[in-house]
Image 1: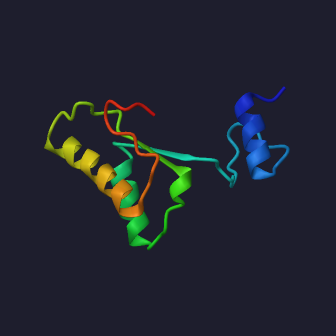
Image 2: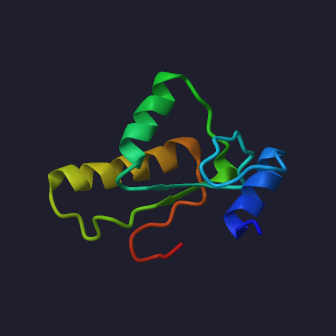
Length: 98
């Protein structure tokens, strides 16, 4: 019996036999970015000249709250700046939940 994760990946990838461990290309509903993964993702995204699907991105600073040092504060600022630059409405500032 497939797990819920397998059922979702099967549906979103169009591969009815997909199982855990398979590599699939799937159409996702949302992409969640946090304060740790955000900065490198934003840099790569802008390097390739991508345009975000603003209604499919959720930005949540949640690992370094409050910021533990200058580097983590810069990561949080990068997330805030990216949301503002591209008009991403699903940006949830610290203390606002998500």
